[in-house]
Image (cartoon, rainbow, N blue to C red; front, side, top):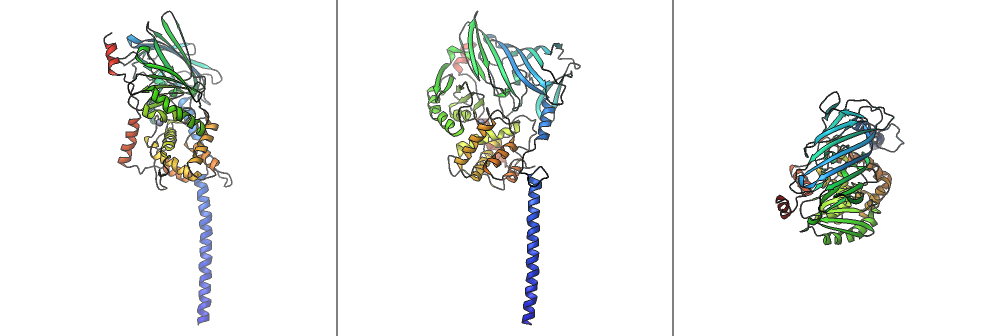
Length: 496
Ligand SMILES: [Zn+2]
């Protein structure tokens, strides 16, 4: 009996063990094959995951259709009459399989009066639908001008536009006013494509018609000349850059302090209305900040250095080799020279990562800065189409905590900074999306964060609470630039 029972028990245990082993094996193989199906967009289980951007690239080509070669704009600025006459040429060729060109040019904010619009050597009628149609997309507020002509995909073409910009200010200045959160860029000032991945060399000439001296600071290489009572600046980005990252501001020299400094061998040009916007304070901050960034992330990315319009209130906006910013946001905006203005997102929705990396760098100086939880889920990326404008403001907070999770996975802040330096060294001016960034992280650190990235950023829904949203909106609001001149300056020109 005992024996029998023992034999029976052993037999029973054998069956249990076998079942468990088989279940384990099935589980093991099942798990592996699930992972492969989820993680790898290819059928070969031995190949490591690589992002497949085919569909996204096709959508971008079908939406934007042209590849800009260069943009050349001449402005005649009549400061005391508050208008600018512009003429702009955009040279381009067609993207793969595209024949019908589009361009972005938004007349709204500056009440632009269009005078002439040409495609190649043909003068077109903007009001005539057989020449031009305005097309809209369900996924974005961005409109496009579609030319009703099919072009030779093998040759170079150009669009030429003459127009008047009516400045909505009470003060005689003229400047770029980009907001990447809302997603409006420089398509309000010249014809271009308002999308981060379209990189193009810009040459902008500004003629100021005034007997008084003006000052200008801008992105890129700036040359000043003057003749016959006209002060002229030519701004050349030299590099091909995203159009919405080009900055300039020109204003009466008597009203603002202008200074040129050399900090850690980086030329820095300053302009300020004074008050809280103390150039001395700004210089003091960059004297430690630029060396730190150059040590941690690499050489300063812009050959011609940095232009800073320092403000006494509001937030800040980063541009290529330039920023308009209050003192508190100066370091944040200068950090963007590395992430945002030289490494660039392929689409607007991906530009959550430049805010996330930037905020992470700041927050992670506190070793207790919490990483995002494994259970967090959101639609920070998936909630927008690749052709939508603007980015999700949760990039600042939740995004920074996602970067902290990446840092933990790599081994800590030092390792994460080395990874960021690696990304900057290898992918400057090579636009990349969120999954490309994940791929760089995985191959650099030999880590697997695919499932977490999918859940954190590409879920269909999100666990963001109303309070989190309020916080995200408050951060976005805090960063909003305020370029209103001091009251005494507005008053000065009111009397003229
Ligand atoms: Zn920022």
